[in-house]
Amino acid sequence: MDFSRPQFNQRIVIRNGRVIDPKQVLDQKADVYIADGVIASIGDAPVGFKADLEFDANNMLVIPGAVDLCARVREPGQTQKGNIHTETHAAAAAGITHLCCPPDTNPVLDTRAVAALIQERAYQSGYAHVMPIGALTQGLEGEQLSEMHALREAGCIGVSQLRRPVKDSQVLMRCLEYASTFDLIVFFQSEDQSISPRGGMHAGPTATRLGLPGIPESAETIALSRDLLLVEQTGVQAHFGQISCARSVELIANAQALGLKVTADVAVHQLYLTDNMIDGFNSAYHVRPPARTEADRQALIDGVKSGVISILCSDHQPHEAAAKAEPFPTTEAGISAFSHFLPLSYELVNLGVLSESEWVQRIAMNPAHLIGLDAGHLGVGSNANLCVFDPNLEWTLKKENVYSQGKNTPFLGRTMPGRVELTLRDGTISFRRA
Image (cartoon, rainbow, N blue to C red; front, side, top):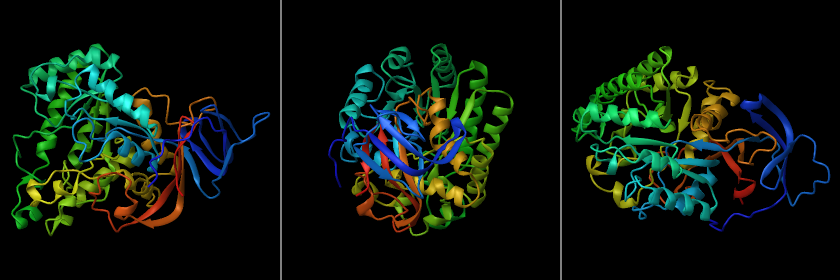
C-alpha cells in the first residue's frame, strides 16, 4: 500500500465518464477538467488547458466525493487501532473526501486543543478532510455542559453525547437549549443503556439460543422518543445517527411530518446484517446498535428508499485483532467499514432501491448540506472533491485490500459490486488504484 503524500497542483482531465451531480440535475457522459484545485469545466476544455494527467473513466461514474457523518480515526488516544494518517488514507481509497470524527477520543474531544490537533494532522496527511464533532457534555460524562461556543469556533460541525448516558433529562434539555443558541447540530445515537447494560446483540431467539445478553429495540426507541420530545421542546436541529429498527423509522417519519428539524442516517452494514448471522459467536458481527431482525432490516431499506433516512454513513470503527479475540460479549463493538461503504451502498442501486442520482444524494449531497459544507456536488468553480467509481467491476474483499489499519469486518470474502478507482481531494490525487 502506498502511503505517500498526495501530489498537488496538477491539471487533470477525467475523460469519458458518466458525470452524476444531483444538485445540478446533471447525469451525462462528459469530460471533467480540474485546475488549481477546482473544477474548471465539465464538457468543453477551458481555453489553453493543458493536462498534466489524463484519466480514462469510460464506463465509470464520476461523482462527488462521499461525505461520511460517522467515522472513527482513533487519534488521539487509540493508535493501536488506527490513526489519522492510516484512516484518512483508507477513506480516500473508499471515495470519501470528508468525514466527521465523533468525540470519543482520548482525551475526549471537548476542547479547542483536541479539535485543532485532529484537523491539523488530517491536513498534514492530505488524504481527506476531517471535521470534528464536539462533546455535548464535558468529558462525555453527562453532567456539565461542554464549551460549545468554543468548540464551534474551533471547527466542530456539531456536538454529540454518542451512546453515553446523560445524568437526567433536565441536563439534556439544557444542553439542547444551549446548542440551539449557537445553531449547532446535535448528533444523537439514542440508547437507554439501563435496559441492556451488558447486551452485545439483538434480544431475540438467536441471543436466547446462544445464551448471550440481548439489547431489545426498546433500548433505542425509548431513548429516541424522549430525545424527539426534547428536540420539539427546544427547537434544536437534530440528526439521529445509525438507527437500527423499524419503530425508529416510524418515529423519525412522524417527527418529520410534524415539521421538526430532524434528519437520520443508517450505517450501510445495518442494511445487510441480521441477528441470525451471529450463529457461531463470530465477533466480527458485534456492532452497536446490534444487527436486528429481517423485518427491521427491510424497514431500514424502505426508510432509505422513501427518504425518511436521507443519509448513509459508514460508522467506521477500526480495531486491532486483540479487540475482537475475546468471547463475543466482551469483544469491542464495531466494524472497519470504509472498504465496503461505496460498493454495498451502490448495491441498493442494483437492487432497485435507489437510482444512481438518489445514491449520490444519500452518500454525498445530503450529508454535505446537513453540515453546511460546500461539498457533495461538482459545480464549476467549486473545490474538486470527487471520485471515480467503476460500477461494473466485481472484486472480493480480503484483508490485503482493506486499507484501514483495522481488518475487523464480517464482509471478508464477500463479492463487492463496484470499486473506487480514483479520488481527488481539493483537486489533488488522494488515491489512485494501481
